[in-house]
Length: 442
Image (cartoon, rainbow, N blue to C red; front, side, top):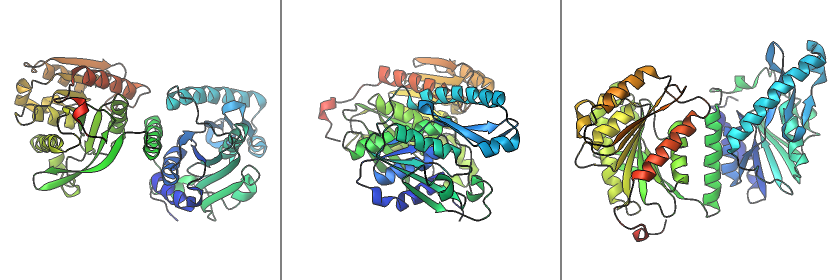
């Protein structure tokens, strides 16, 4: 059995756990790889998703080999067989544990964003990871769930060794595994795509899951698939409208990206929390994306964005709302190009790590207030943004530099800073073209 990726693994695991749907369930994903799997499980069960902070204790000089694990609430599990086989002494163990506890503390704060853990007392807790190897982290996670008062603990993973029940049967009330193959060497051998999960993907999964659960409970924003008319083609997208939204931001993605871009989804969710609607859509069809020339055809991309703007102005749910553009990389050039079109005329533009220089002669025609956000370590793009800003002659403009950030803003806290800057720029400049109370119910 070869799994495509963690999301497929979570979908299949969710199908296996369907009997829990409708019960009082909480899904706990183990960062980082277990969170995308857990997100799919939580969606299948209409259950809240949280993290269970566990850190593997790797053998010095062999960090991929786990000699134990630690977790929140002081949980500590040591695999004495591995420790003795590798000759790890008390001093080395204490050093590794101290380092991992500090990482655990920092990541817990980053992932939860100051929110308290989801209560599990008296509930069924489904502990999810992307697989089990030695079992130390899964064992620690189950013990954390017990310590917090879980009434029942289910350990669910896509793949594990054949002796999975012997290793972990005493830690959980129930074990669920899709595949226990012979010749198990490593979890990654059973995935086609086992790319390392980043911190941004973890926080995005948690925020999306929270939004999904709120919508199921009837407390979240309207969030629906959309088909955007753009000339003779139809572009797939997702429209999210918080209750009482007075403005909507259309996202123009960069080269090789689309509506599923984790970075743009991260920013969009921050705007949603500020009460702004968002439209994330593909600027190109799947067939068009195969021709790389289309990815850099700024006039074509700008035309699609202008068509999406017209679509938003005609849609009953968004008619009359102020419209802003958020562009990333080449999408920023498309946003500024479209902003110069008389038929589009968005109220405001924000660029993240953009290439506004590719909008060329259109820059002097832009009248919408424009914010350019660039990473301090992205020096070439920073120079291009400075030159482009000098050509924005007819609009208010500002260039904000995120210190130490590279082109993708992958550094800790960098994307959060982009979100804050974009949120403040949009909320400070966007105003509805009709009263908010005139908008129909979401």
